[in-house]
Image (cartoon, rainbow, N blue to C red):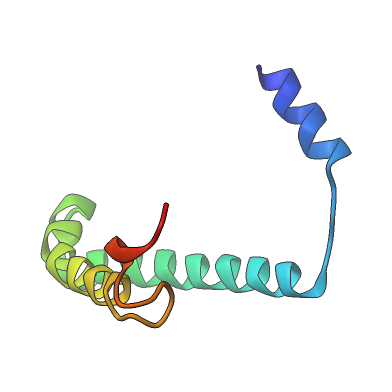
Length: 82
């Protein structure tokens, strides 16, 4: 299976500007998030689990607001024809 994934990845290569920009944005935001998480852990002397527990409600609200905003899929996500 690993060999098949490797072959598919190498042979199905397609680059475009938008994809490159989105990839770069994903890498930058992940780096910032990791640095911020480490800083918060040191400043407040908490474990990663404690920090995640404290941040989880805010992340859930953000996700919920994005899922039901009506901007991407119509009235809301559940109305989409999957």
